[in-house]
Image 1 (cartoon, rainbow, N blue to C red):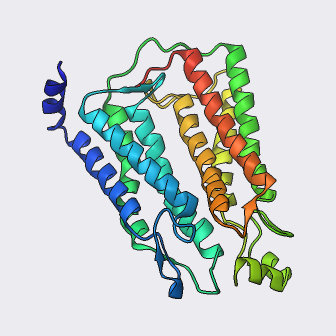
Image 2 (image 1 turned 90 degrees about the vertical axis):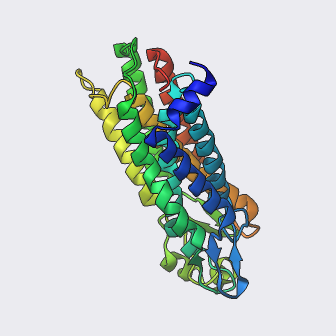
Length: 312
């Protein structure tokens, strides 16, 4: 079929149109709206260090990627990278788009006040959450409707063992490293599990440096969930019978890629945030968490390559 024929066919497909509409709405909301309201300081957009900071920058980048994927779907293209297509990437990026909003609202926004003024959620997040939450659900529906891929090879015992053990190592890192220092401000060192009490015990220096009521970024439990799911799946895959897969177009490696992408981008958002903010810098735990997420992605891509996974 020619490009024109594919466009005429897909424009009548409600799933294709829904993807395009949701991706467009999400992108417009995250780039045009306010991410944070900080009392007398005013409202701030996605790119401002007092607004979305790293979470806003990645939110806009994901919005661009989702729109491009929607246009590719409309044009009838499936393959984006070897073993990763429009369907798999839409599901992975849609998941992160949703988690990113929660990570910012609950993990960073309330723990970094400015001049003792409380921080409030901007309208962009409220508006963007609705399309963002539908994109992963749409991805599940569309990947289930896609023609099953053929010619996918099973992993050898050696490869399956190596992939499982490396996934287990990555999962352990995602769980453990948030207990280490994620942000530093002079002599102040805070992990993702250090709350307001720990900051308060440090005295006036913490209040003067980070603001009244500040604490470590509350992202540890989110990463704990990701690490626990990946670790449990890795252990299950070490069994002689392995672990059943969702389907030929959504392999376990694709699931690992989605989890690894979120585990990688959340620390990356924090690193960008610390680079924008003069008062804080990234700690060793933050960098190691980033590396653990990157290892998950690398393992998933290796498995895709070894199995000859098809882009859908």
